[in-house]
Length: 184
Image 1 (cartoon, helix red, strand yellow):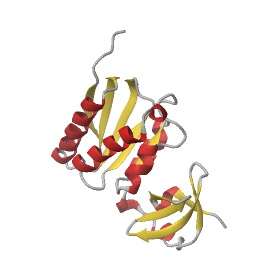
Image 2: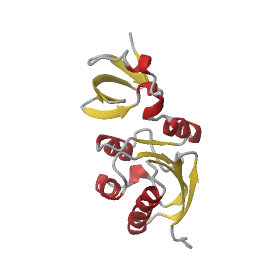
Image 3: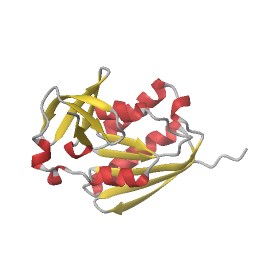
Image 4: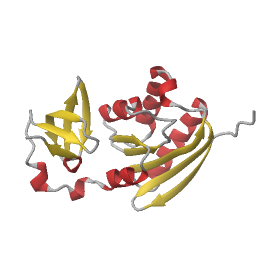
């Protein structure tokens, strides 16, 4: 079986770093890519990344151990600029409905979205603190029930700056107010 080594292509697009990853998944090489990505973000003074993972083989999040995913998450926390918004585009075979990477990164202060829908990711990445709708932001209060774009329900935990922290089954998630709808 011929396994192509994992490689990358970087592009600067609309105020975010686009990263195309291809080849056979390798944890050691992935850690080096994370380091290089951090350097690219710093060099270009960016805080958003779109990572297209759809051409990576040998990776299915649900088949990886929590330890492996957590290990990659800790490398991201160490090498990417604090608060970087991360969007990961994968295939249905690579990612499940619930992404441990998304949850662990978001809970660590790196808002992360993992999905198979590129348009959803681009919309999510384009949301920034500069365009928060003040009227929308003020309609949430601690304890309110809300839902996200996928229909998942949460309770408002708190609001810090332009982000809302919500809770579901003991886990905290970070959203921008535009991503949530109040449930009456």
